[in-house]
Amino acid sequence: MTLLAQPAEPDTRTRTGSTALDLVLRFRALGLVVALVAVVAVTAAVNPRFVGQQSIRDLLLSAAITMLLAIGMTIVVLTRGIDLSVGSVLGLSAYITADFLQNNTGTPLPVAMLLGLAVGAVCGLVNGVIVHVGKVPSLVATLGTLYVFRGIVYFVAGGSRINASDMPRGFLDFGTARILGIPYLIIVALVVLVLAGVFLSRYRAGRDMYALGSSPEAARLAGVPAGRRLLTAYVLCGALAGLGGVLHAARFGTVDASAGSGLELSVVAAVVVGGVAIFGGSGTVYGAALGALLLTVISNALPVLSIDQFWQQAIVGALILGAIGLDRFVSLRVAASLRTKDSHVD
Image 1 (cartoon, rainbow, N blue to C red):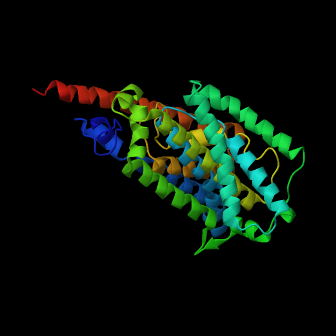
Image 2: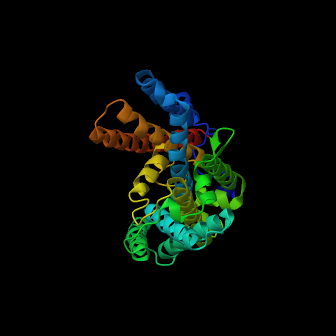
Image 3: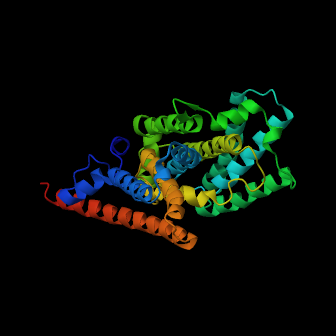
């Protein structure tokens, strides 16, 4: 049970014996905040309207859905998995929810949200079963379901799309309304973020995700129910993608079969940039949320800075490579430092 109490996550409390390395571990999240502030400051210096009230509100609305999907993706990545189907799940959930509301205009908002969650959870369960029962690598399994779920959306939509005029006014208002200046969508994302953070850090099932990602075999020997935990991870990821689909429909008001196309790459990028180790066992949903916010700000800032679209994608790609390189460097240094410390123990 020692594994469950002390996962191999190199968190800020780890003492590696290297002062410089301890500082890197302690301030990785702070580095994201500094980068975020720097991007905003430079962009605001060029165009002050970038930090206007409307601009900030649009940024937060854009980041909310990506944050939701990044939270779910983090849970899967912690177990050494990945879910490339989240964009298609979002599209499927958005279209089914919008279509249901079109034919049932009196449906309460909570029912619509539960419908979207259920659609996403079923998709996540399919992914989990293929990965766990079928023993198919998550990269291959979810790449396949990415196309399967997208194909289902096109089949259901049949080339049509649902417009704002077809959905209830109250549902659309939820996508743009705010309380104390904060959009509802951001409040939903923050509530989910806190719940996921507490789940991963305070509950055994959440800590098991880290144990599985750190050393699957050791976790199984320690009694971790690996199968149930993997299914839970994929179901949670799918459910959050489904919730993201509901929020997508509420915010944009128009839904077609292409909703969420290509979003999975942005979500993976946010998770990796946010400090979640792509090899599993390390990272937090808070870092992933910061990564989603940083990438959203960068995507909005680069056009303001008149940077070519090609370079925009190249910069995001460089951030991903840099984050992966930093994770690999930190992991190797932590392991080397801990081995050095152990070698001095009599």
